[in-house]
Length: 304
Ligand code: MLT
Ligand code: MN
Ligand code: ZN
Image (cartoon, rainbow, N blue to C red; front, side, top):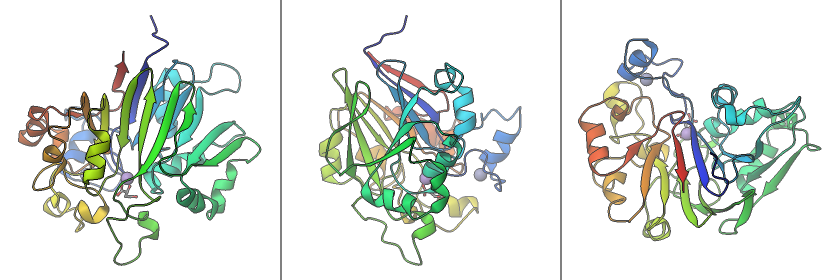
């Protein structure tokens, strides 16, 4: 029986930009994910779906994998000749893993697209997004810290989290702890519950921990376990922090920083393909023993 008064959150894509496996990556995790007997299920790029009534859904981020994500989740299938249960889409930054799926949502289908003014400007500056016909798709810019109705039964509030400009706009030496409209977290409330979705976060400031303390559910940035794991894996030189993502482990890492905040459930998402938590092992155990969960495609949370 469907409970029509409970928020449901469905992880459409638990991986970070690139997915698992990533098209050009031969790291240990990507190789295991390509091997049918490797024991690692492939994971798609960062997106979450939420509903309060089981009929109208909002997508938090539109990943390049959105087509397969919709097909993999029957609750998002059309219920009529031309139709979608997706009533609205909200993007939390301007990176490719969070906006490229908008291009797949063309074909004159009405929905509401929520962004901050700054992210809205990025979309407006790229004419390719004009495929979202303005007669169908209503672009709505929302100011930080102003509650709005995201979808039937769910109110959302956007708030600044430390981050940076999208990769394709960042230039040589980007500021990685910008707190403004370019990287936001989302507070969702409805049916007496309080949920946070923060897929990118450079640092947990006191302001953020004050805000998220006592929440029923938190989806949090799990991009890298070790700040330098991409260099260790030989896949790149950038640290997690340089990419605007605080690591899970180490000094100032999220495993410690989220401790004691009395959050009902904490689920890591936006997990990079190099992150060792994809595998059973000491890193995953460290996260799980601290009480956190590792998200995966198709993971569903019913907040009753
Ligand atoms: C990120 O989260 O750092 C970005 O998704 C990187 C990218 O666009 O590849
Ligand atoms: Mn990303
Ligand atoms: Zn890889």
